[in-house]
Image (cartoon, rainbow, N blue to C red):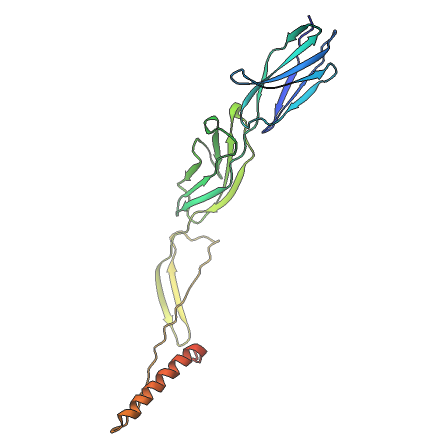
Length: 252
């Protein structure tokens, strides 16, 4: 009987398993390398010559546990090695999307990783100071300070605790709105405004939008005993008003 292979290693990527071994002593005609799933069913196999010490199996499913076994062949005789098991790495989640933001929370979601059975993995969510594990593809990050940035990272955690590459984003909680908006001084060409901010931060800036309201006073000259002239003057005044709005002839 030929000697059984004992020094086997199996290293996975997301879709492949690289198998290597040490040649046995004695007369060997070839080796047969097989890949089995967790239920012991054959996934793939290949025969190699007696000088080969490694082979790669591709087109595997991400985040799945596989076992490999080598069969040493010598003429009509063969010896089976023990099974060596390892897993492929899971695929990463897809891009993170923010669903809603408040002054103290961020609710975000992400698309499920491709080509994986959702029952076979979890997600690890890492924020600035915390780490969470969830089965869901969304997370509500709460109890946050307002108007602040947060780094968010999500990885897929598959069998054997193997982790995917991460997807990351930076998002902000909303600032508190200003309150007590008050005008403190008005001149002919300026207005001074003051307001309160519940949690002011050095990084804040403010967008102030002013709406200009024009009060137009028309003076009509009426001629006694001539109602026609009055009507004509009114019509002319209206026409000039429309023309002024289009050509911005008002000096503001």
